[in-house]
Image (cartoon, rainbow, N blue to C red):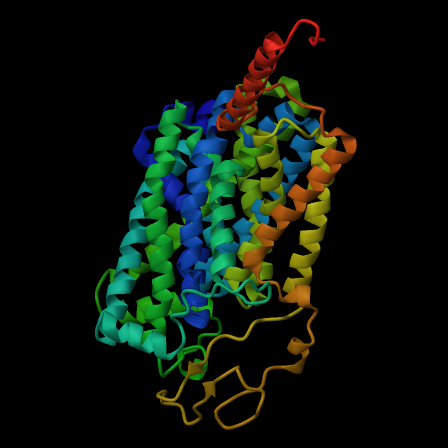
Length: 549
């Protein structure tokens, strides 16, 4: 099982570095972020900035703990730190979360194909999902890691092709920024703390920060890659080396949206759907690639392969980690005899990979009606990962808190943020994008969409009045959900710790469940205490014997 789930713990650095990069990048990045940047501007650039900080924190705070504890899944750690119930609950949450996330990732490239071919969505979802499930089930983690190397290269090639072609089409980088500035897309420094604005400096940074920490600190999919290495130092090195690649791909995705806006500056392809047949902004990246490269043999296929690579890396990684979490966290503890039977456990793991693939295919069918695959996908992730990250953080950085305190905080925080996230998703509220133009399209009826006005005129359309009456929490952008979920869970857990007994330590100070960074303030505390003792002893010795007690 160690070979199938952890690649024998003897992987070389290159495939792990590339897989660590690829795991962070999904079609929600390569397709969804350009679409969001196209509509709402480049304020998204703070997301990769926060992600870099989060990955550094994961490398030094979280990853060493898993090597200290010698675990196969991150949820085994929770049993060592808290109790079995906490392990089972959070592992089950991970399974639900990643099935939903994987479904949105599976749907994304299919949406891309639908933009440029006549292949029905349902057939594309079925075919793509089946291929991913089969190759992941057969090969295990080692196969996933090595295929990620080639798929990551394809992603970079496609990203650079799109950027170069777009800049050339517009007439130079200066024209790109001139048009973006005129369209209000260069909104890079919105420092307003607003929980209803879709993108600001702060929600982008904190979303990236918590995303980076969670992906490689509290999520089986990311951590499993690093656990395939033999030593802590190699795992840290792999994660830190992958940071520039992750930052570059995220930043390129933000720039793609601005470049595409400059390309379609006076003729938005979605508003001009009678000619383009596009219905969603998530289709704009593949539409541009195909329309630009269709005359050059091989480039269309190469660019579409790059988009599919982003999905293949994520889907295969998630299916493998789902199988690992199910077998290690549920099957083996419940059926100890199966743990001793390597062959049956391996067959079960492969069967689970196929089963989870089938479930993701079914859920992907239900996503065909959503307006923004990026919003839905990140909302699936954010709702669960904020509360989960809070429990891991408390477990690794403090000695306080029992399993009951952790469960109280987790379930309270999850309930609140789940309510906020779901009501937001189903309320139908969508923040108005920046102005979009069709004045240079060849259609007889051209419209400039300016959502800043409610006045009906030949060049504007009104904002539906129902949106202005939406409950304020339903307007919370999905970029705030993870951070708010983390804060609520953290606070609720500490309330439970204070009530149950603040001075009661759940683990000893030298526990392997604590992060190495805890020693920094533990040593300082011991030094201060030792200094006080010496001071008291010195004072006592200098007092006359009649005044000593």
